[in-house]
Length: 447
Image (tube, rainbow, N blue to C red; front, side, top):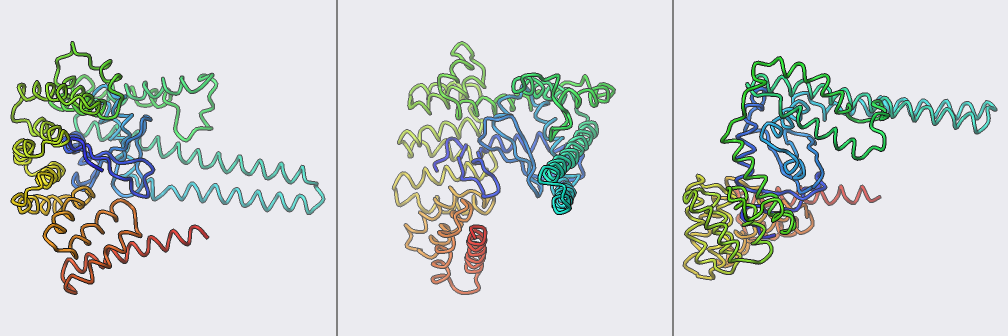
């Protein structure tokens, strides 16, 4: 799909149910805001990914590896960078604690109880205890199994809470945001429970927020950094991210209510620019972008937005200067480079294809997880008559989009035209093999 000012809606990987949102400015903010916490957790910042998912619910989770998944609803619900950092610290606690790997321990314990109850229930019925006696044993066993699993899950959450608190302390960051966010979660628990006071804490996968606050608050307040203010530069960046996400995802009417015309701040201009562009009001979107450019004419993300609006308004030639400067001022940010490549191709000027090829090849070398960039590079190869490499680029795109069938067929077509044992041929072979394995796995699951 076409990216909107870098917020490219990419088809989710099979392990993730929601679609992934990618944006150069957002990902740079995620890296910078999380870097001290990642180091405090004993991990390397370059090895931890924070992935933004298009989901309105307030949630974050880890799902194996060193990746943290953040719902867009969590960013929208957060008020400041400290709250975001509190969530990241907690999720890093899961990663550093190996909780995903160890989750099978809780499941196995619950399964053993369930199997035992099944055997005892069958024995009771065989011994003449009757169906009611056997069923009672089965039901009790199921309850015990569920209780065992929930207790294991709550223990992991409590462990991640304490680990996250230690990472904030090591990073010289306040825990205020963490407590504030737990209070937000407590309000959500109030909303969805008819009687919050009567909620059974032992029937939850997570400790109740009121209990988490009670455990953590005194420790946070004892920290020498409790009253330390948040980094004003990071806070300003957070507000920009939140605003552009609102303008991109929300109905323009909602954006206008949250960021009215009377608000002349940078986040408000940002949000309205996205909202007006989404509503197909190019003049109003351009006016908001113009206001941003007056404030910071060299800001790479403002330049990116200006170029993207021109490009999607059918003016690719006019978009190129802004996008070129955005790439240069963002140190060759690959997501922005992919948009520049798209603009160069969209001019339909043969003289621009050489630059497009160069820009896009560098973009996929620096970030090969962008199917949109691979799609554009495939167009360049096709224009040059290099069909084998166009097929390889297509295979890369389909592989990233979780479509193993088309990926395998495209990779096999590429192998037929690329010299054997060259890097490109080996890459095509890898895609063909992994795609074939993925297709076989799907067939086995259907049986």
